[in-house]
Length: 265
Image (cartoon, rainbow, N blue to C red; front, side, top):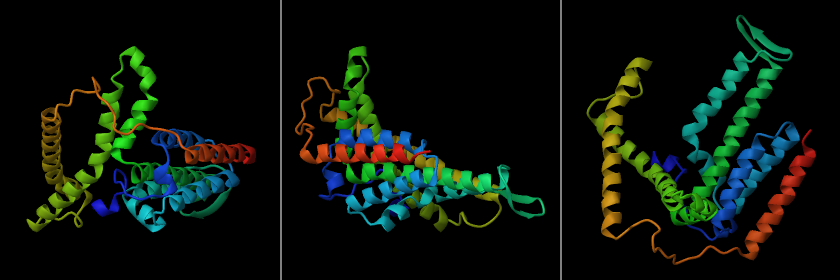
């Protein structure tokens, strides 16, 4: 299961996307999330799709690997598509069979919302695939640094976010081990009614939560043993610094953003 989950994993490489400043990548992700919801025609959605797959190519990761890694959320994408397809009664009637009726408004809304969801997951997963947890921590801390004036624990917040992302593949790996152990004891997760499947998941959740709490406790003890005291008196081995590649990326992104707003209706 861990191999099918890319969110939280880091793939070492020397691609242009890996070499970008983490502050720029974080700001770009926030901007992309905002822009995706402003798309309102086929041209704008096509441009965003080209954006997303271009970023995957620049990261030197296989497109099949990224799409395979977001397999766990395909169910929600398909559910969103079918929900709007069958329950949104807008526009002209395209097809009707008994009580099932499909309208062009429901089809358009289902496709656009599902595509938004897919593009968001693809682009945000590239952040952890091309950025180490330490870089993400430093980037978030640098962006939130002005909040220190109001006594906001910026360093601690950035560290919590970084650790949370790092633990996603670890917990997925732990979940796979527990599910195999339960299956070897005769627990069936794939057959039976929905009610029986839900009850079968309970033996997975209890040991998973216990394992997560143990890992958190061990991590806290290890950090305390190494003298971690937050950002008090803390220095950095590597300081974030913008390069020519970052400035080129900013220019390209701004140009593409201008093109996006120009082709919108």
